[in-house]
Image 1: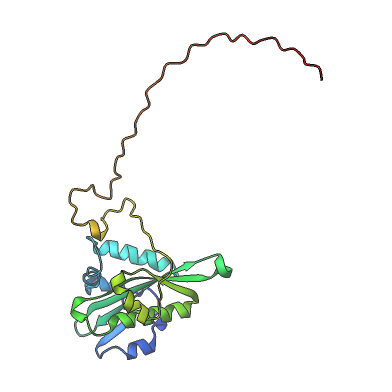
Image 2 (image 1 turned 60 degrees about the vertical axis):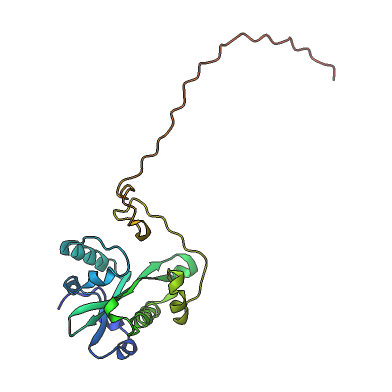
Length: 216
């Protein structure tokens, strides 16, 4: 059996029961590289060229970080293809008595599987995971277009999300069409002006008047 990222005992039976016949929700497996996992992810953002070796190394790295990475997939068992996926990343804190916070990431459903409520099932499963692990809150980032979907799933707008891309090999999605920009793998050179050397002032002898003690 292909190695799984976490124990399948953390999959909700109720979520599985709500899937159409022939679909299975389960942890990410090493074999999913050949089951269209990256084809599914490509519907979300830039994936890049990832070799099977890179996938296996990253999978094993996540596996070593016990109780941190929980990637779930929905598989079309008849076609042996991954058709939806979502991720829960668990952050260990010192705050709130060393509590845990869950970050929901990379929710995507393949275009060919729209209308089957797989997005809702993914959120239900990740909420189930967060509860089982003991997270005191779940966080996610979404566009304003998708905000109503997450509100229906019990989430509410909170604070403000910000991002900064630092020397990433791939540009953020909104910059993919800007071919004239430098690649993010190279820092943008910023010219630093060199101050001109100023002549030193001529030193002159200062004549100080004699100090005379004043009467108290």
